[in-house]
Length: 162
Length: 110
Image (cartoon, rainbow over all chains, first blue to last red):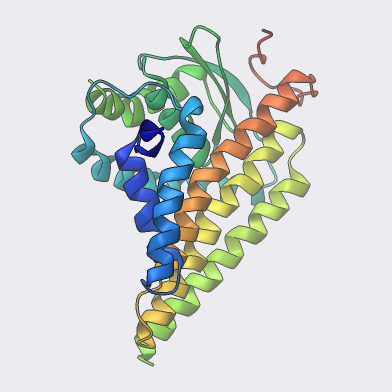
């Protein structure tokens, strides 16, 4: 019974609690109680969906990665906008991207990044988690897409999850 | 309100509106399902991002405190947009939606 009252993922619980304080209008007794309840209940309910935790993660490299992603989103948005407004047809391609990352959390971060940056959407991960299928809106050749993803996003993530 | 802040807000609103419009045009103009997926998912990232930023600046300039809820909306959107795009693409691949002529490579079967 007592182990039911534990917090299996303390960081997730903390993030949920703080987020709830921001969402509710000012910190009050009620928001603290409800925040604690949510911080306890949500990790309990979603525990089965979480991959095992990475053995080591360098969180302090995250801001640099985020800054690069935001810069890329802005630059690439203009490129996609120009492509949509120009009369020429796009040259779409499905690209098989060979993954170097192994941890499921790292792969999902990479896939989300690829989907967020304009011009590419990640479609699927192969069953053995070695290949990522990416749809590129306008690709001159496959190797260019693979190289861009490798140097810009996968290398920093590899450093983070070493 | 500071006139400089007003210019910044107006610029960000116009930018956000323009990108959302271009995303919608892309949805109508691009030829197949997978390319259409790029229009709306990307318009949300920059378009909504710019509109949210202008909202944050507006409420900060009026001295009503920094709009943390706008920042949270942006974060939630950035977390959910790739997931929905991924699920849509996966579903399309599963039922074998036709791709446009000249598409290089193929979605795999498994």
